[in-house]
Length: 74
Image (tube, rainbow, N blue to C red):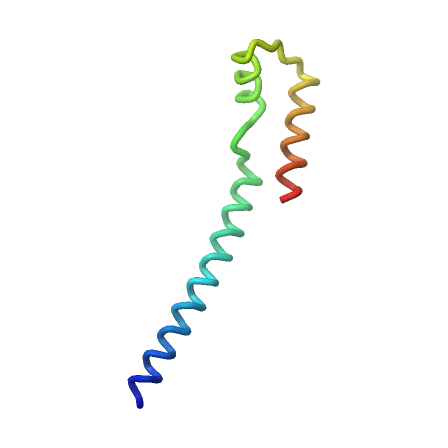
């Protein structure tokens, strides 16, 4: 009977640890992406130039705001 409780407690602890680890990792990753966005103004400028567009600062700012708004929505 003791081994049954040992296994049961082990499984419950494993599940609780996995769930807690998932939520901690998710929160950490969201904070990291908020502080370090994957695309910055320089990268956006280079991409637009490669696509044949002549990016103005106004256009860059509009696209950055749109991406930030999309990220905040999630």
